[in-house]
Each structure stands twice: as C-alpha cells, then as structure tokens.
Length: 201
Image 1 (cartoon, rainbow, N blue to C red):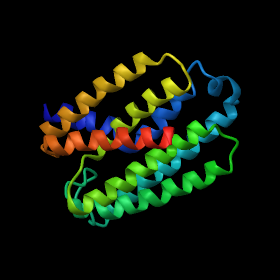
Image 2: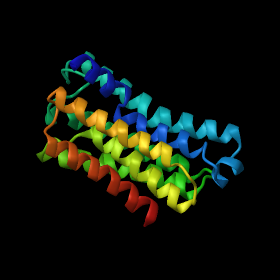
Image 3: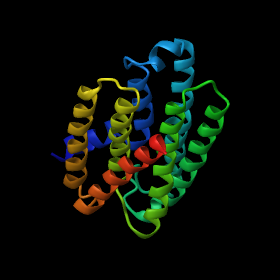
C-alpha cells in the first residue's frame, strides 16, 4: 500500500497540475482550442511547465543535495518554506511572461489561481501543515468546473476522472501519514476556491 501511495503521490505532484490543466483546456471543444495556433500552445505549455514544475523541482533537488531538506516529500513545515518561496517567485515570473502574450484571459486567470494557491499554501504552512497535493488537484477540479461553465463546453469526463484521482491522492497521503484528514480536506477546498475566485472575479 505504501509503495502504491508513494507512486500516486509522485505521479500527481501538485507542481504538475497547471500543465495538466493547460493540456486539457487546449484540447477542449472551445474557441481556445481552435483559435490558438499549435506552436503558441506548445510555447505556453513549455513556459508554464518550465517555470512552475521543472525549475522548482531542480531547486528542491539542490536543497536535498545540500541537506536543507530531508526528502522531496518535505515532511515538515520548516522544510517547505524555502521551496515554497522559490516556487512563488517562478509562478509570478510566469504570470509576468503570460501578461505580455496574446493569450485568453481564462488561461491567464487559471495561472493566477495556481499562483494564489501556492501563496496561500506558503502562508498557511508557516503555522499549520496543509496538503499541497490536495491544493493542486483541488485547483485542477475547480478550474475544470469553471472552464466548463464559462466556455459552455462538455468536459464532465475530465472532471469525474480528476475527482477520482483526488480520492486516490487523498488516500495516499493518509496511508503515508503525511497529513491528517483535516489537512487534506482544507487543502482541497483552498485549491478549489482559489480557481473559482480567479476565474470568476
């Protein structure tokens, strides 16, 4: 069970959720899919993937090598402070780059929601350990629901699949004893709310 839980936690790392969200949005039956050239989609995905996943991951590996964190799981609140701070910097950089690009407001607001969730995770983590994994999948689900309503498109299978994955992630974090049930539920709610606020307001 623990091996399976570790695999699920690794595969569905919170930092990869913005890229997954973009891939889904770019492949929906909407104007975004049909009006954005493939080359531009690829550029956006590379930018977001590099700034919000690859670089934060490399920084975490560097911190691990220097023994500033004990593992990539970052089990304690103290270990998460530096990685979160760097992640916020690169999320903000991503927003700065996207602001200059000819991109749909929905895409930009989606990344704002992801940035907001990381900032809140950082702030909450100072006093209380919250589940970043659940913030990530909660944000993805919140974004998909909002996008389906705003663009009036049918992506229910994606939403259902994401909810099932959320259940697997939450169960995995409990099996690994990385979080309490409350930390998992609160993380999920924070992720959902960040995307709803960003995409609607």
